[in-house]
Image (cartoon, rainbow, N blue to C red; front, side, top):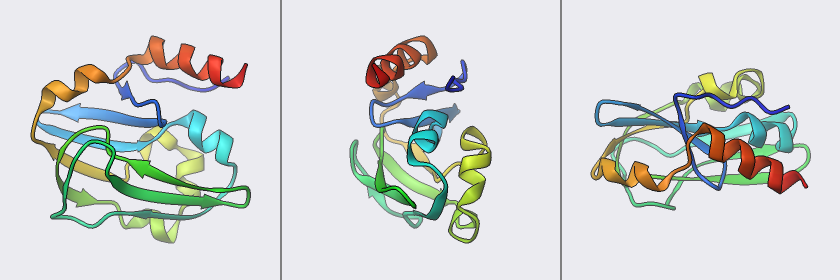
Length: 129
């Protein structure tokens, strides 16, 4: 069973969002890392880039496939997690503890368009079915 955290918001493209003030930390969900399998590569976009919803913010590759991460909110990347490049396996080990980027949100109301934990869990169940 996929782990879902109650205090996060979720995008249909399997990114999670943790909000602290006006800053959104973004990573991939446990469901996504499980579907990808063992990650061999991960990269996050650099700081000081303005992003809109659905802009590229990172990418991952596993022995099975490659996948891109898309921003679920608009704003400016203020932190980029470079440690994932050297150790992408940390995402498999702790998907919710490993963020890719932190974005200073330009419009926090965009979070309303994301799923809560219950809705995301149902979404994942439907994807598997």
